[in-house]
Image 1 (cartoon, chains in turn red, purple):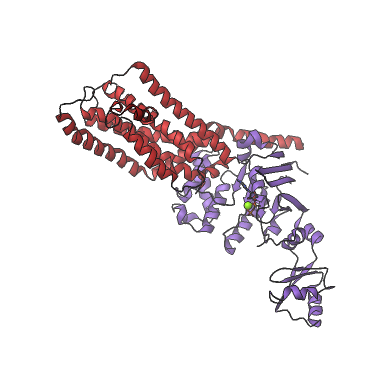
Image 2 (tube, helix red, strand yellow):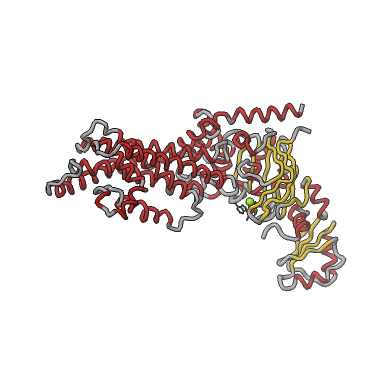
Length: 278
Length: 308
Ligand SMILES: Nc1ncnc2c1ncn2[C@@H]1O[C@H](COP(=O)(O)OP(=O)(O)OP(=O)(O)O)[C@@H](O)[C@H]1O
Ligand SMILES: [Mg+2]
């Protein structure tokens, strides 16, 4: 009798956990969407406003000087050259927003991740759900950006829409690595601001964003090679104006970005287990 | 005797050198209310987190509803309601949204979660705060919301870590009333307190924990009978005189305990002993006779006061 009773308890528990086991990551994403809803305004305004500003200032403003000097970059106008890089850069920026403070807060100051973990959701699902929600947000950002590029006439190639994927991949590659770092923070005594200042900003300057990486001396070019932004930018350029690079190099971009994204994802999952189950 | 829903045997949790929980064994039957009583750092929350299947045990056996938290965490947690010591509500969401989001984590359909959320807001007396920001709630209201959230899945077992922290007497009263009702409905309760008050009446059984080990186990009445006297006479002579006066109290009561601010005389008749003290020419500034409580049990067992 009593053995039977325990079995029903356990069976009830097993039945109740089936859906969370399968869909837990999505419930976490739903939660994140709700939080994002409170700043949808900002996401949309920034998602439209900042591409317009950048495309106009650099692609139209600065371009008048560059193009007037009669030089083209690899045979295209400055607008066409810089636009895909701005898109890639926007992807990194949005990913940085989502994977820095929100993740830190989840673990620490207002430990919502601890709260979620008290439900049937696992640490892995928490990480997965956060990533899924950012993928959705990034896609919105990248699509908006791409549409504005079209408006500015910055996309000569028919394969241009693939730049959306390039931006997404770049954001994830950098973002998941950043998440694995912010997941380890016990206190924020300025580390996150340091990441912005000493990693994100220099990365933008040394990733062939505003001029080709080859303009730099070789001893500085390595920054570009290890920069997700450079790989994502180059991919976006191949997509939007058929930037000529060897096929193997294009493959390398994809591999590096996917590799980083997966590495950051797996690492973040491990850290989540260590941190939440201790 | 129904099969226990929680079985812990030689449960150990170490953090580096420190043994936060150092070989704890207990069983909780279905529908029972079980308390963990102990001072700060005793290992109560650590035990709760292991039972809650969120913290991996270092060694020992643990079974919740017949399942092992190692490997069956989600299954176990699907049947639990957890009120952690520190609130971890999502302050970026509104009050009702916190319940909606949390209900989803149990795989419950949206419609059902919404209905349940409204019931629980009423339960927590937060009906008119549903749209408020969490940060705009008082500490006590946040606590009530945390408790409401723990009930979103109709849990079989409710884990309450210092549930009344931050509640005013009125809210506390309401909470105990609700807990009694849940108990009547057959919910198993596991709760920690560092001071016992009303919990003394709610707990069927409890263990006194100190430094990660169990010092005593029993019903509140048993523990008081075993480790204390029927009454306690509290006398104060002023903090500089207490120790000196205590010397002269030999032979009065069964046992005398000197605390910084007062002297406790353990006795079967406080009034009679108070008379003897005054007859001896000692004039306490204040005096009080009360029933023994778990606080006294604790003092006896550990030589330390529960409330610092
Ligand atoms: N994550 C952790 N890492 C290291 N040490 C920890 C950790 N959690 C708890 N401890 C230590 O374990 C011991 C028991 O802590 P625990 O929180 O279980 O005590 P408690 O009985 O709940 O106390 P309180 O009444 O203050 O809530 C303490 O010495 C604490 O410092
Ligand atoms: Mg505690």
